[in-house]
Image (tube, rainbow, N blue to C red; front, side, top):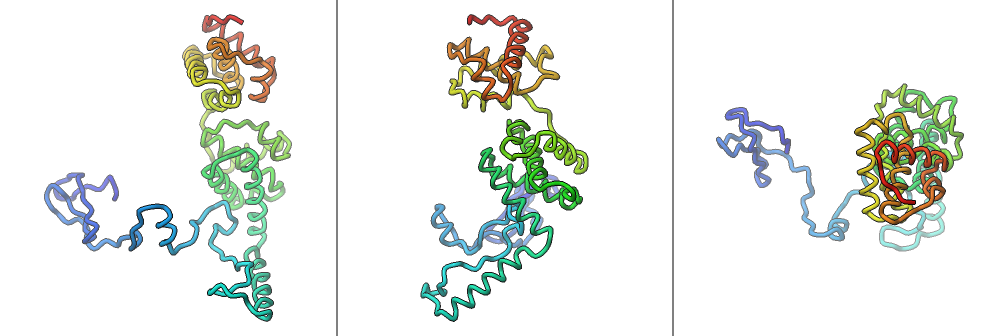
Length: 303
């Protein structure tokens, strides 16, 4: 039910939906606001996941990560009928012919062929950089919008898909750098940045500013540090933000330096080379940010 629904008579928001009669009733004055509503749910009940899957009579939900959104059908490669019996040689030949034409008809236009190749590239990159299903859906949506605006013409599918993934990660505040994505996508960093800026400009996408806090949990887990070190690193970043030390600095560099300081204070020291390798930055960056933190915040560190 809509939480903003208000009774037109007494203006009360305490609305009840009666599932047995399909009526929407105000609990204060008893006014029937709507009646005989259609129940969109299933007519059966299920009490666990297995029972729900067994009773369900629908296929997989639609998804943007498939070029046809999962709406097309596929003829099974097993040559068996509805009863599980093997088909005769004549029927097998017919099924093979139908299967071949069905696959051809699934991708019949240039846009479908483009999307089919792009979604395969999306699956490959998603498995390499380990992104979630939500990020894949957002990336596919951005790429489809780029196709509608005719931004793909004259540019490689790989670079535009990699730029779409990077844009989705930035929107969802996922800690990933353009260098990491460039290395996994085999796309030049400059080309990837160019396509990323094109998507932002042409599609009017607003990107939230990156915070060093988004990188802390990832770097801490990869360095096998404790939760106390992570908590202390976040405290250091909060203090640095209050005095304006974070502005204009690379977020991954600030996160790496705060972890370096916190690890020393918690007795879990890691070398600057180890932290720089995880953060994909240079040791000089870690050292410079580290000096700024201990000097500006007056931190006591015993190396």
